[in-house]
Amino acid sequence: MLYIFTGSDDFSLKERLKQIKQALGDESLASANTTLLEAKNLTAAELLNYVQTIPFLAPARLVIVNGLLERFEGAKGKTAAKDTANKNSPDEFARALDNLPPTTLAVLLDYTTAKDGDYREKEKVSALATNPLFKIIGSRAEVKHFAPLSAQNLPGWVMQRAKQSSIQMSVPAARLLGRLAGPDLWALSTEIEKLGLYAQGRVIEEADVQAMVGYAQEVNIFSLVDAILDCKVKEAQQSLAAFTSAGGSPGFLLFMLVRQLRLMVRYTALKKRGLKEAEVFKVMGGSEYALRKTASQAVCQNMDSLKNIYTKLLETDLYIKTGRFEPELALSLLVAELCGRK
Image (cartoon, rainbow, N blue to C red; front, side):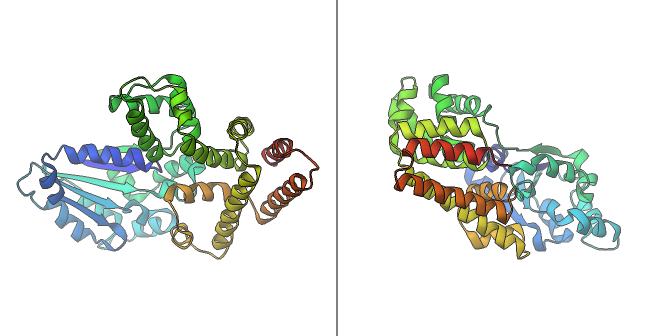
């Protein structure tokens, strides 16, 4: 069986990968019969050798190849497709994946859909159709694209995840948790488990989510910052109301906005230097999710617009410190201005 998994929702992707591994039986034997390959320097001959290897004391072996499709993207992919004499051409890799033994499961992972931010998901999916290797093997593989969940689908995912863990949760609680934590499924999964322990068997309600004040305030500030910089006016206003009602500090919000703005400026500067996405992420460090978010926000801006945002933040700070506006009014005006920018 051949699988092709793409997309930036690495949580759901890895969950599906876990299910495939579990089908191999005993965990220790499954690990011994699982091979993870990086495609950067992989040859077609080496891949053929790995997929043809017989499993050891297990019904099947699992071969996971990361980044193989990416090798044949765009112009370089077209050039490679024309060079049929190349022993590492798309045709050669396709032959290696032809007629897989019934004892081999092969999975091709492609994270390229996340390179330019979540807003490029659809474009990257369309680009996959022109990939010369995918053209050959796509029709005989189970292809699954793991796109990030929309805000509307988060409560349903939270409810389903809680049910899988035998945790009862009300719909309002699921909505609140989804709004606070955002689309980071790793964080959501962790918090569902924490709430389950906190509720000790009873139905989790909104008050239980709100009771986790430390966490709620932390994720609320990130949700608020993202909503403002993504120009989502309704979501930003709701998050601002929740932030201020919980006693959030205006200074802390401005600090977090400036912090994210600096990351966006740094990302933009590194991209202007000609660095590839992977190189930019390596230089900047931090979590993959946070970097993807920064990339999706920065790519919609230029240096002039970033400077304008910084000026607005500085003005708001001065308005609050000089008493020209009450903090809540100053923040409300700031949110309106930033969310209304073009």
